[in-house]
Picture 1 (cartoon, rainbow over the protein chains, first blue to last red):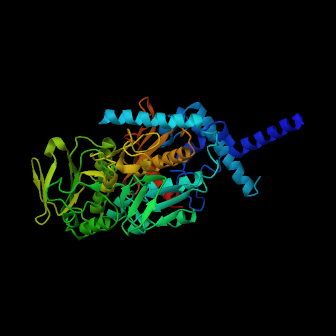
Picture 2 (picture 1 turned 135 degrees about the vertical axis):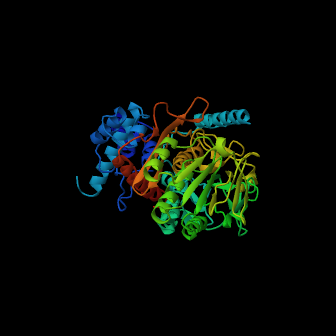
Picture 3 (picture 1 turned 120 degrees about the horizontal axis):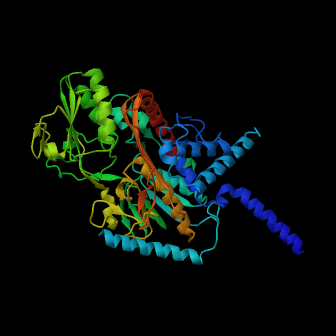
Length: 111
Length: 428
């Protein structure tokens, strides 16, 4: 009986983790990601000259943010913003947008 | 006053922090629905965002937005309307998207706050009770702080610092002006709504004159000796409009002290000007509506706890945007947007008896010097040891000086992209 209970709580813990995604590991990541939406629109029906973040996978997102911070990737504004982010924030944002992209691709039956 | 404010804000902070100890460990998102009423006053860059993000954070929350206008006209890009590059419709937005989110949108004017019974009085006679109140009321002008400049004179010498009919009026006056006519823009001392706005306006008026009235020019009468993105504006003016924009700072002419709207005369401490079109941007304060609850505490601007945006004067009332002092953040639409997101999270957390997360806030202000020439200033902010919003050292800054035209062109495109995104964020 104890085993079953242990198993159940393991399952619910996993479900909770995947339901809340990266926010379970880094409490402020959704709040931080919301700030990105001020320029990077989530509205796919109205594309803007500022790229959407939804098509980016985790690795690309990480590479961009690190590249902007070091100056290895040229930017007009993102270099000035990324250099205020900590390693942990970049990592959390990469995972968060990676998750969001994956969910979006699944929703559209692309994956 | 600042010292007392800081003490109060630390006390408030402790009050919230102690709440956490007794509160359960609910998830940051998707926690239990809360049976509470939140009223948001003002449907602009702060209010619309706060209402939408609150509804996203707490699905069952009763959120009412009070806004007296049927459509919100943005100040961002209203300078492009004044310069004839676009029409007022392109900067006007309805509230249908908020209604689709389940927010009750009341087209009413909020006239007074009663903090004791926690209710907002409406011009139509109704009363809205609240558990938490969020105000993003914007600015009012300090009429007659420039002698002779009041609501009546604003029809002859538009301020166009609240977008809408004033925007159209200033544009019409420019269109009616003869070639060779003089445009004067009066700019107040800090702080005021949109620090780089007057200089973008001067640029886009010069752009209109360049295209239609080549013998005309613009004189800026500034109450300051330096201004936002000064080097970049001057570089652009020299390239695009040589000799067309003359900037006179406080050391040159002093303050604008009086106007004679009928004679079209503008007096400064040391000189007198006779423009054909006068754009007087008067000194400002938080919207007078906040005085009904004493939220500005006798001053011009409201002080808030910079982590929760709750008033340091009256509990359960949060304030956003141009009406507040938010540490080092400038009074911009972008600032209000980010403050609103932090505030929404704080309100949701506080209704659950939880401590809101440490905020990170961003501001980016684009300015257009021409349709294909943009510049920007950006900053990232965190709370410092005193709980005040302060820029992260080593980050932020302005566009590079002397950059090739492609960079300026790209930033003009990104300025339009930013506008599309932030208005989609606000209005859906």
